[in-house]
Image 1 (cartoon, rainbow, N blue to C red):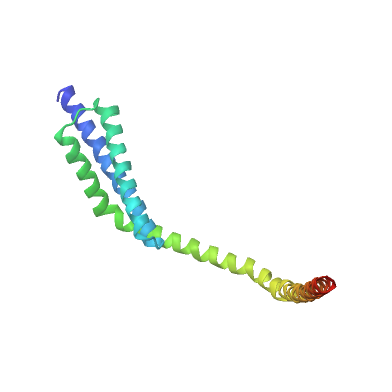
Image 2: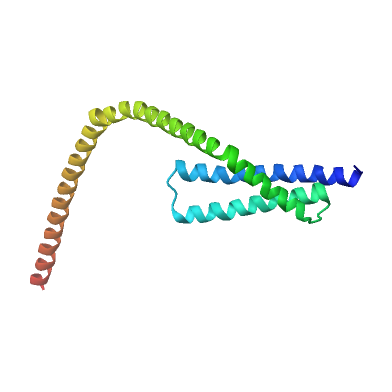
Length: 167
């Protein structure tokens, strides 16, 4: 074997690894979609982001390992790497990751319930009655202010009428 053949085999393996990396990035977005409800707009952004990341991985590897030269075996290596990843690793990684994220979401939900329960009790015992007291006091003050305003406006009307009669 000559040096060129060994170099091409080395590059082929590197681009198979690139394909595996691209498959992993693809699964990251699949895991996010399975674990969280995302609107279509976010899905479109994720798709664009995936293709940008995949292009950057390929471009980086092309320039670092192959001086930017495109060869058919490079793309065959990438597709082979993606196929290997999807056939042998993807299902396992997606299932485990979704289960882990689901478990973490449940833990966070339980922690939220534990933390929010005393706060809801405080709200019911202290804040809600205080809110009702302040609301009632504010309404009484508003009624009193309205009476004073009406009383003063009646005095003004009477004063205006008296001034008109005085002329």
